[in-house]
Length: 290
Ligand SMILES: NC(=O)c1ccc[n+]([C@@H]2O[C@H](COP(=O)([O-])OP(=O)(O)OC[C@H]3O[C@@H](n4cnc5c(N)ncnc54)[C@H](OP(=O)(O)O)[C@@H]3O)[C@@H](O)[C@H]2O)c1
Image (tube, rainbow, N blue to C red; front, side, top):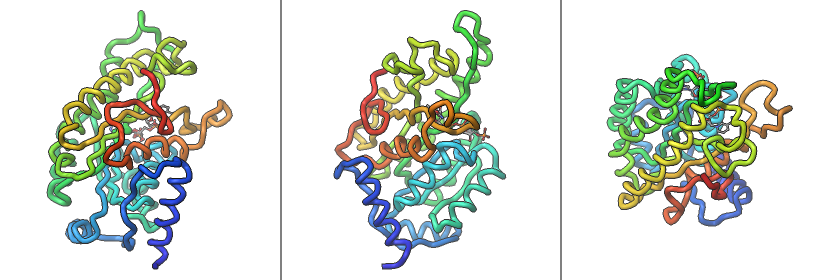
């Protein structure tokens, strides 16, 4: 067994210990290649059957999206790391490849239809399918605003990125997701959009602002409708809250948890078994009310 294979085997055990569920599935271990071009990828994919995972908003080093990419790649997936800043995407991709992980970088602005179409065309040509889509981008807050006085133009922008961004990407990739035998869509949502979150939810002061909260509630609603549509295609669609996570300086002292934990909450829904839930809202694998 080579080192890469051993590492993946360890990770599978680690994930199982963490989530305690034999129903979580991970791809069978396969040898790691440090660098490859698209042509080699096609060959590799068909040879080893690794799952193809696309993660949005993953260019920021301290962000949840980047860590989700790392965890999915460590679980044996081929990860397409995307973000709106091309230079940051390149840097993050190099860092993960240097760890022996199977990662490709692509620039993607989820608010741009042409950028999304270009990603979709690339994925269709390179892989012919997508197994996992993690709609992680973005986090557009309107701190300090109140619903009665909120700047509606900013609210519209927030909606366009937070709700329509993921919706746009899901629409563009749906035909590729349907080609997967284990399609998964994970919409990264937030307790801020929930009636049931006592710390950040809709009935609290909601420090992230009304536009963010409303957009995340809408993401949860979209999740249910998309899950219903894709159930017959065996694509599981869930919304996930990563919990209050330390993605900005000083967050830990405010009680935020490590990025690895927030990301693991997201990864849970990306690696669900085929008989796993669809149309739900979860944190750390447990249902949340919304
Ligand atoms: N952190 C938390 O406590 C927490 C709690 C609940 C839910 N969440 C959710 O978890 C997800 C990740 O949160 P985070 O804290 O890691 O956020 P973050 O640090 O603000 O990172 C968000 C990422 O999204 C990217 N992005 C912004 N607009 C984009 C666009 N139009 N197209 C593509 N990418 C775009 C950003 O790119 P740039 O680097 O270029 O700005 C950044 O890389 C978000 O959906 C957030 O709402 C977070």
